[in-house]
Length: 250
Image 1 (tube, rainbow, N blue to C red):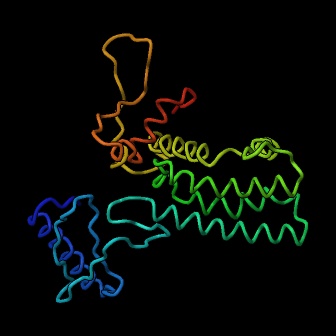
Image 2: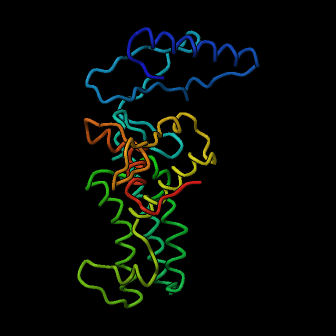
Image 3: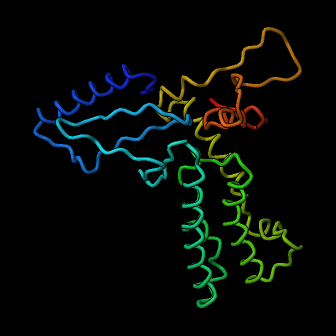
């Protein structure tokens, strides 16, 4: 629910009251200690309202909070989550590197990396796919460290700071390419109904041209006044689909 004024806050409180009343009617109770309020906005002076459950005020989170494995920042910047995921993936990679040296697991390097490290660094990437160079480099350094270690352990000769020979030998795509493919699959899932989200589906607009032109794009992208809005997850996936000649949906 979008909160633009005090009336919107009162409506949200009214919905919360009805929600609590339903719980009481069913003989259930809410754990007030696990209930939090957080405002997601990029304005300097957000509207705050003291929401309550019965006679107890719900505590408010400032800055960021953790939910379902995601770090959610109040300004919707994915930087904190990317930093957390990268550090966690690097720790797991460090364990794999130590085991590989001690136990001579050269034949299992790719399997260990793909099954234990990639899921960490790619969890929920459709949402937080970085749009800044700093965040993108922070993610890619995980795979670059793995490639550097692999080139040493398997004696694969590489030019300075270029590990493409290892990529080719292991048949590994870059993390950025894998995120692009995940975005295309998610978009395709919305269109064919395998991903059930009417709200997200309503954000997709097909581009219908009035006359024949040489260039053709499948989806219409509304004008965006800021780079932040242009790189919002749905717009980013639609933009990538327009640029991908292999993208198709049934």
